[in-house]
Image 1 (tube, rainbow over the protein chains, first blue to last red):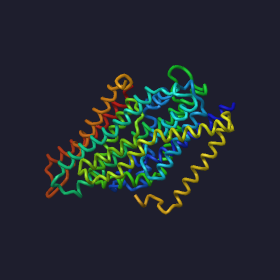
Image 2 (cartoon, helix red, strand yellow; image 1 turned 180 degrees about the vertical axis):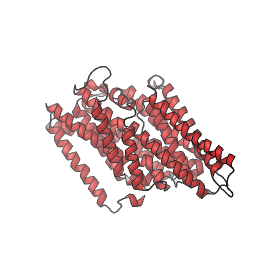
Image 3 (cartoon, chains in turn cyan, yellow; image 1 turned 90 degrees about the vertical axis):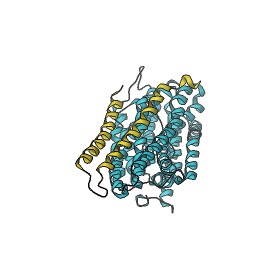
Image 4 (spheres, each protein chain N blue to C red; image 1 turned 30 degrees about the vertical axis):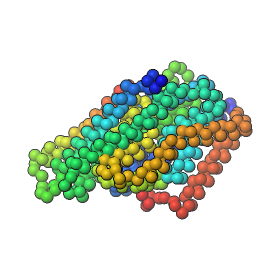
Length: 368
Length: 73
């Protein structure tokens, strides 16, 4: 009975993570379209939310990877996964407060791995899965997208040289509506599944699902799709401003090239079952679009700050999750600990959110 | 060690598909736009038709890619 209450709590926290994943990652699909005025901000986030919802139903390969290849379901409990989720949520909120487009996926995986390491030891972490399915694709994907976007942008500017820019830009803005929609759809197929994978992992560890290849229940798919869509609709304006304006100034041809490269990379990786960071990929695409036009226009100091956050995400989310687990264990892992820690975490998250909204550097749709 | 735990074939497919599709779609779309865009004087019917075909080809490539990806088990 106690573990069932914790499981319900875990599902709620997992959906809360999915919500933060949505608003943290709105920038991935829409920052470039908003920056080039291809779409008004509110329309952009509405479109992105709808397509994220649809995308969540298209594929389940990434969910299967998360559920089976990262940690040993037989060695963990819902309380451990709960601590992992709380670590991921807090890292997402901290980086959102700083306006840094760090990876929600790595925050989630880092959180789960950190909590499992402290609670069940290194034997319960599948190092092969973490390295082969997460770390190597994480390193390759943004570089790949950077290279593809740089090449595409270079070709585009050769093709349009000497042509009247204004009329072509109108065409590229229309193209951006399609390419940004594609990125939103791709984001739904990859990121919504990570939460589905974690909830499925919890159901397996609690004995609610069994068999050699337990599928993802339909209610998990629907609730994860809804949570990420709602989060996307709230619009993470701080990160949209960073990706759309602070990495490099973007023109519509660059926005189109960046978005096409991002969508192609995310969709191909989803098909291979790689849970890569859509944030890293789309940021790599924007950098590539800057390099393809003129490398010195890229604000490398902003890129360096982002890269630092990228490197820190896995260990930092892991460390936060480890602390959450140790506090939970001290308070009692049956029901009291998870309930109290979740309540404290909710208060902390709400305080951070309110403080950010009241601060002088508050960012809204009008600022992007 | 990495040689055995990373599915290099799958990763190579991701790299190849992503790169080729990104560059091909962007090039087709841009070429189509350049051909149909009026510029100093209106484009000829042949130019407009060719431009339209290239634009259609860029969308068809995306649609075909999505179909292949999401129907492959």
